[in-house]
Length: 169
Image (cartoon, rainbow, N blue to C red; front, side, top):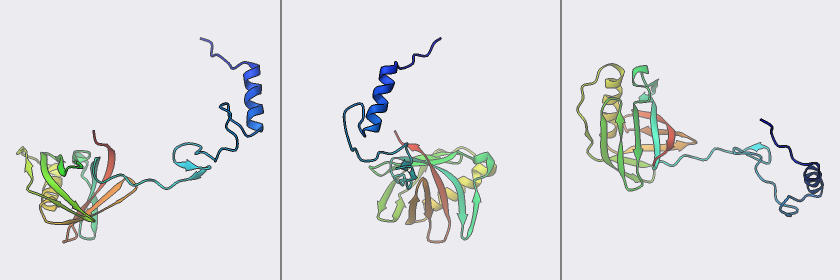
């Protein structure tokens, strides 16, 4: 299969327009445009923070006071949640699925009563589930988003770290 190549006159026109500071559409002296996403004028641009709501968050670590530990391998990717703009929270606790009402007021996040499925869990999934159930049910939580990383912290120092997986549908 042959790949079509631009004709010599088209290449010459593009070179002339480029040298004159114009584009094929005729715009001249246009402001610099990003070279590709993540850069502006060839320099890295800061990452935009993922929104707290309408983002699917995957729990990557649990905090117990000053100690942070990654989610156990057998629960990796199973603890995830989404906070909808209307305040509905849903997702997986590591083993069971859950729903709850969530309220965001400034840097404070509060979950209402959690309704969940009741499957028996073992190992790392059970450990993650117990930690998240206690955290979400423990009263007002602090939260911060930096780039694509969410940190939620309880008054007792427990908490979680989550990474943005995608925009929620």
